[in-house]
Length: 390
Image (cartoon, rainbow, N blue to C red; front, side, top):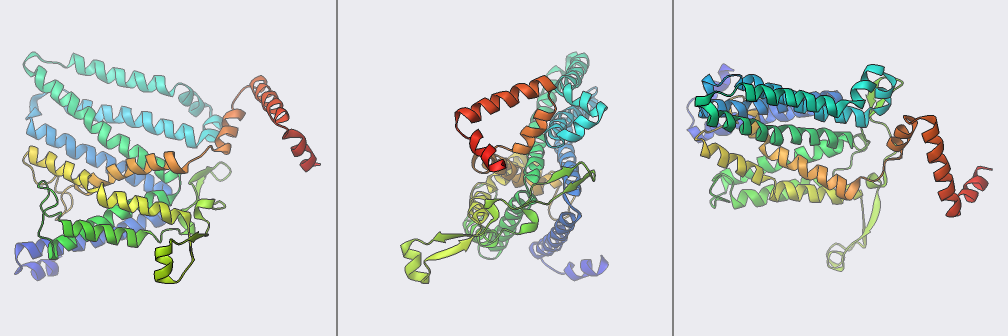
């Protein structure tokens, strides 16, 4: 707006950048809360849109840096491979989380059954198209760009697929990690802007030790309180209403529990126990990763941009650069959260096992039933279950 341009017109460049970044940061945070309000389906679409934009920004850099203007089919094949990889990953997700819906619809059931073969056939088609497009004078450059495209797919599409999986575990596993990175980035920039003097590493001079410590403190302090009931239930698809729902009895992870304080803290506070959600303990691990390891995603991106002598991935957001400039740390964080859930949180899911059993033939179901009955009888559990039912 003109009044804002007039307001910053007489300022030094450093303060102009401060105000532009600040206003747009507030706008992005407001938009973030708005899409959370709209629900998980909108969040998934936003993740997909961000993925596509990040892919476009990185591919465009390769296109311009390597002067790939005359390469036959380069951009067409890049977008085709993006389509193939997304078809594979999101097809796997649909089959995994919407199994009953897939089995109910015949076309979806067929696509699910042959999903991996179809995915391979699509990729193989693109591979053959690339080989047929090879031109003698561009061999080396074409293989450079083939590798560029595939590394970009590995970094961008795989990570966004993990973000979707985190979201299905519960919106809190999506929102808290993203918020940790946002909070850390804001606090590190503010502390570094006002107080910082010592560069953390040479690749990113504005990230200072002071900002790093401030971001660590602010992130842990802000998100150790995370445990809101609205966000804790896994996102599921309701076959009766054909819609997503977030409704469950919260697991033990989100039930308040008493924790004994160490003797040192007990002597300071006078408390013997403290009531916390177990998730709050896990949120400390998430916040710590966002503060200590997460910035290295940004350092990696800084090194990449310096290697190709560019300031930002794009000019999508004034004062911030491209979408990839805002998500360089988010992708690393998403991978950590997915690994963390798989290692320390997620257990066997009985509902998914039952869905898969119901998809079997009757004779296969009977075989599993008899095997399970024999196993429970040998363990001495089946008579107890029968007595309880009586």
